[in-house]
Structures are given as structure tokens and as C-alpha cells.
Length: 420
Image (cartoon, rainbow, N blue to C red; front, side, top):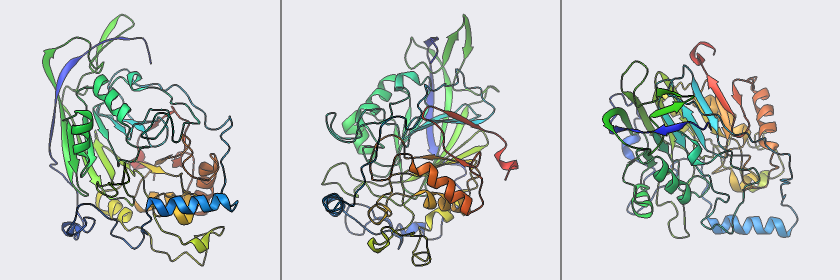
């Protein structure tokens, strides 16, 4: 980040029901993902096989005891990490995405709208600072280095996607930011964080957010509005270059996953993917998701081979593509998938990710959910390798179509509608 001196101008962020919500599935009113007669949620598709934490733990321990497990080597070099470069103003002609590790992306829209997805900047993704998965690649920056954030979008409450220390730092650094969370998560933000700028949504619900510049001025606060650089003032306000308010539409959409922060709140809150549209560009953040559930008998085999190719896959992504697509950019998970018979209901592997990319009608995509913490058994550099193979099998180009980038690297996407 530059050493620019900053001062802030207040703006009002107004959230309202979306004027253009997009189409909704005919069965959405049935809310089959809501548990009937009790609190909580479920995956309503044949593609999901429920596995509780105890069963997963026992299976992983057994693999370790029998010598079947793999301990990934995290010795450098692994994934390159760069200090990110963020735009000093809201002026950009292209859609711009910066990978900040694991599932965290900062996306800058041509309208000036800036959204941060699933930010976790702590060393461990754990309820404890002294135990749990530790980073094998360092965080490319900290919250204080990000000059402007208008919205934070959370996919679900697992610790590798929702960090209390990170959220509290966002609250301090960007106090006007608005949080968008799946149903049931608002209470945690209010009670654990003291944050009230929160909108929680169910699947297929949408909201508009409008940023309007206030005339009131204040001292240094969030560093988001007036930026003084190289001796000159340049406005980076909540208005676009044309002087109009910035408007974005944010939609909560399905994915196949689960939630829990303790042993006692499993599936009590919803999980989601998200769409964000602003300035004529549309992004789909897949969150954390599975695509199919493969049986233990497939262990060591190609679970897309003849024997298993007819396994049910999650229909939600084709619905999203048909009803809300196409998308200029998809942010799609490609890691934390091995062993498949344990992880497949919750975590896509690269072949799943390519199918999700096609189903959801994304014109471009970047991979995520890899390269940061060891959560599963695949080698740390295997996801991009298998992604290239999966794309080749479908005759889809990797570079510029469905790609991976270094941590801290930014990619720009312009004229995606004209190129595919």
C-alpha cells in the first residue's frame, strides 16, 4: 500500500429489496433446505450425503493408523505470495479481482463498488490462536492495508471463512462497511462483534445497496473517501466518476455445504453462494461447496469413470446459471477434497469445479479454497495441476478462462461478454 495520507468523508449506505431480483425457481417457495419442525437447514438434493464431524474424524484417524493418509509437504516453495496493489481511487474501467488467500477475494467493480469475500487474515483458521491449521503461506496483507471496502460477503460460518479477529478489525478500520450473511448468522455479528450493519438473506433473495456521499466531513476514520497522494487531492468517494450514487445488487444463492462453529450448532445457520452485480459487471462467488457424493468404494479410482459417472450432481448450479447467469467472473473452490469419499459432499475437486463453472454459466473463473492451510490430504500444489487436466478434458482453455493466480495477485476482466 502507498504511504498516502488519508481523510474520510461519510456516506450513507442504504439497503433495500432489489428492484430487479432475477428469476426464482418454481420450487423456491417450498424452502426444502429448511428443516421442518426444528431449527436448522439441510441440503435438499440427492447429491449430498450427510457426514457428521465424528464420522469424519474417525475415518481420518483410521486412515492415519492404517497408513493410507497423506501428509502434504508444505516446505517452500509452494504458492507465491505478493504484496497486493489496490487501486487508490474508485476509478477502474475493468472488473478487478485480487486473491488474498484461501477463499478471500477483494473485487473492485467499474462502478467503484468494492466487496470483500470471506476475509480471514489470522495465522490459524481455528477458534484458538494456539492450535488448529496454521498458514503455510503468509497473508499477503492485513485489513489495514485495504483502502476501501463497501461490503463484506460471508458464505458460511466455518473458521476458514469467518474469523472473529478479522471481523473485529474490519469493524475498526471500515466502520461503515455493510455485511451480507446467510440466514441465521446475523445474531453472531450482533452479539459476538457488536455489529449492526448486517443483512441476512435466504437462498434466492436479493438486496440493493446504494452508497450516497454525505456532505458531513470527519477526521481520519476509514481511509475510504478522500485520498491525498503525491501532494494532490483525488476524491475516492461513494460516487462514481459520473457523480451518480454507486448501486449494487447482491443475491444469496444455493450451494452444497454445511455449517458449525461448535459441536452444538451443526447446520443451525445457512450456507450460501453469492452474486454481486454493479456497474454492468456480474460476479458469482461459489463459497464453499461440494458437487457430488462419491462412495468409499471409489477410493483410489477415478470417481468420474464409467462406474461412478452417473452419481447425482447438485442441480443448484445449473439453476443459478439459467436463472441468474451468465456471470462475467466466477470465484470457484478447487481444493480441500481428499479423501474424496469423505470430502466430496462438502468440497469440490477440480473436476467438480469445472462442471460447476460450466453449469453456472461463468464466462471467466478464478480458483480459490487452496494454497493457504492444510485442511485435507491432497498435496498443496495438486489442485491447479488437476484443474488444468480437467479443463483439457472438456476442451476449455485454462489461461484467461478458468485460471489460478498467485496470492496477492490481481486480475482484470474486461469485455468478457464479447469473448465467449
